[in-house]
Every structure is written in structure tokens, then in C-alpha cells.
Image (cartoon, rainbow, N blue to C red; front, side, top):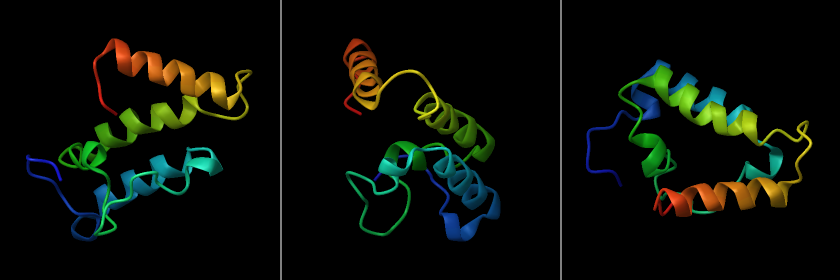
Length: 93
């Protein structure tokens, strides 16, 4: 749960569209969240972007595009890069 105001998908069509659209860009193996939230809403890091749905789409859509199976890197290489970026940024995600 985030500590800032968030907008639920059910309450705003723009938020729902942004979340659903960015999820479509993710590879199939990311379809099931590793840490799902209890109420079926977006995880805290995604929910924290719901006040600006367009930013939510582009921020998380970028990750989906970077993880594309059409790119020359293998999934384990994608994960290694993502892990190193998180470590470098001291981010627990």
C-alpha cells in the first residue's frame, strides 16, 4: 500500500486503460505478478503513478518494451541488468 493518494482502476477509465495497456507490453512470463496485492489492484509502485495515468503508461510501458522477446538479449540477461540497476539505485524493487 502506498502512502500517497492513489486512484483505483474501477474509479477511473484513464487509469484502467493505462494499466491494461502497459501490461500488454510485458512478456507472457510476467503475466502473473510475483507479489500480487490482495485487492487485485496495481502494486504500490504502479499505484503511486495513478494520479498521472499517461506517465504511468510511459514509465511502465518502457520496461515492457525493454523486456521484449524480440530484442537480442535473453531473459536472464534482462534480469541481470534490471537487478544491477536496482542495486546501483538502492531500490528494493
